[in-house]
Image (cartoon, rainbow, N blue to C red; front, side):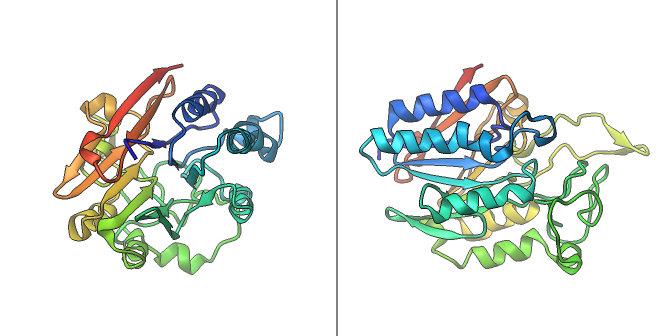
Length: 285
C-alpha cells in the first residue's frame, strides 16, 4: 500500500479544507480515505441546505473522482460532536448507495484488515449533545455540561442518555473483529495523551482547576487492554501545537490525530502494514 491511505479530521465545513483534501486525493489516488468527524459547517448560518453543501463539497467530488480514476478508493466516514445528528441520514443514505462507508458503531472488512467507527465523545462544555456520552461512569468533569442537559437535534431515549457509557459501547465493539487487525476510527482521542491536550492551562471553575486532558478514559483502556492495530482521532484542534506530537505508540498500538487549527489542513498518510513510516503533512490555507 506504500502509505497509500489518507486520514483527516475536523473539516468543520471549511471549503478550502475540502478543496485541498480532494486535490490530494486526486493526486495520490489512495486505497482508503478516513474522515474522523466534525465534517459539517454551522448550519444556522448557511445560505443553502446541508444536503446541498455536503453534496457540493464531499459527495460530488467523490463521484467525480470515482468516475475519472479507475481505482476502488474507499471512503470511511464518521460524524463528530459538532455535527448535528439530524443530518446523519445524509451519510446513511450515501452508505446505502455504496458511495461511502459510514462506519459509526459498525465494523467492516478492508483488504486484510477491518475498520470500526465510533463518534461519541465524553461530556464537553458545549450545548450540542447528540454525540456525547458519559465516559466510564456518570462523572462529569469540571466545567462540562452533562449529556442529560444541553440540546439534541433528534428524539432520544432518556434512559439511554442517562445510563449509556463509552466504556459499554467499546466493550461491544472490540469483539467485532480481531483488534490486532482493526483500524479504529474515533472522534475522541484517548485520555491523558499527546492527542487530547487542550489549551486549558490555568483555567478554573469555582476555583477548581479544569483538566487540560479532555479525551476518553474508556478509549485509553481499550487501547491498553486490547492493543488494536491503529486508532485514528480528532476533536482536539490544538493538541499538536501544544505537544509537538501528532502520534503516540502504546506498546503495539499506533494512535494518530488528524485534527489541526482552523487555518491549516493536516493529512496523515499511513500503511497499515508499516505504521512506523506514517507521516503527517500540513497545508496552510
